[in-house]
Length: 215
Ligand code: DC
Image 1 (cartoon, protein in one colour):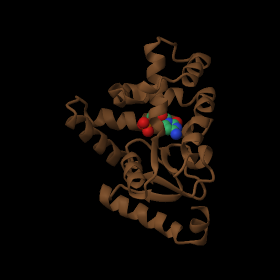
Image 2 (cartoon, rainbow, N blue to C red):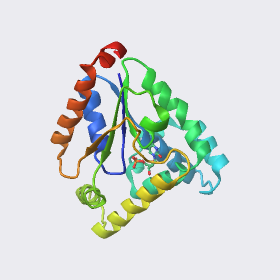
Image 3 (cartoon, rainbow, N blue to C red):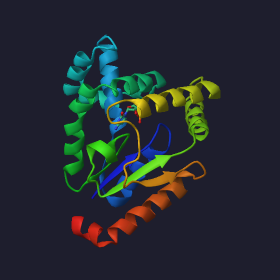
Image 4 (cartoon, protein in one colour):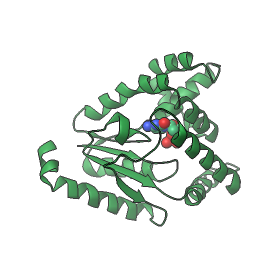
């Protein structure tokens, strides 16, 4: 079974994807980490942020050890990731890695921005996870405070809005729900409730003929 989960920053899709993967015994790939790793590799190599060919070459030779680097979680790397993610050559370089990961048995949960629309248009189940920008900023702000990082709520909200705008407005693979995605708004849901709703959607799929055929 292949599950595609898309949504904006801090919507809760990452936590949900991890929990669903554990519950259904599937592998999990946080595809945002790939874009973050490319951005970090480019920054550390001192590449000009507009040099698409050089950054795509970095994506083709991505150092797997970078995917565990704690610096990937930093806000600055997130903004840089959003910029490299707008480059068609970078997206093309990462496409096959994601498809290969998903198709290896027993299947996988991938979370990102374009999984249901571009990377895995034939995924068995697609979820589009959203929450209001204010609620996502509150969550991100709380997370930063817990990690001891200084950041005002207004600045976090502005960052979230800037990133939403860039991810949704780009020409290639913009952030948008696939026509056949199930929408899950987590503004008023805690993670346990969101997990329950997502399982309900997936179990309904598994109980249909389509679900049984594809397993
Ligand atoms: O989910 P995240 O914040 O770790 O993602 C970092 C950036 O990568 C985000 O701004 C958009 C981009 N991204 C993307 O364009 N496509 C994906 N499938 C995943 C992430």
